[in-house]
Image (tube, rainbow, N blue to C red; front, side):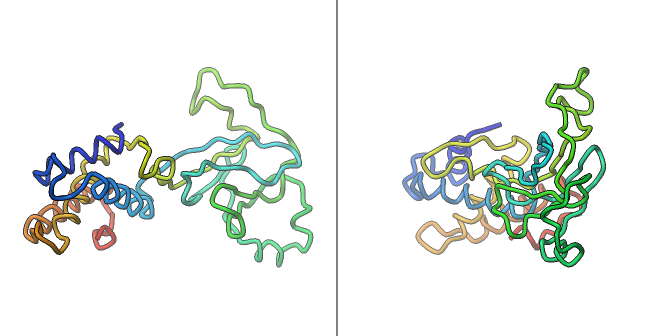
Length: 216
């Protein structure tokens, strides 16, 4: 795991601009953050979030880094994504239903919250599992969310955030490619093209079926 500031320094090395004379440090930092944001929209950064299901509670909070909930489970069983409109068409009193959760929805919620329906009638245990398999917190009668995240949401221009080490090279190479391709005194189209190709090959090798068109 590296900090954003570490990646900025590496971009400078790749551009042969460690003293920030060609591109300022803030310009490099903004480009690094932009590449992280683009990759997050592609679902590159994922998290598995455990939430204690509480009887009578339909709304559950998520970290500010969450971009989207991709899947969810209750009591170890998959629950389906749905819109509030479809739930209302299925049951006019859907908001009042209490039973075993079958659906989750985010369409009318903020990114930092998710609603399950029906709301649980039994609270799950908060006691850790020993041994911690498959995870520390108990799955039975509890919620698991599989999310796409944007780690830079927790940082910003003036703050550092941690970036997974397996994607660091791609972020650095993509940022250097974009900066070297920008119009100006330091434009280098050949370097920009080659770096973009290298970043694409890295992503292809990491994800196998990633559409390289989406990385541009």
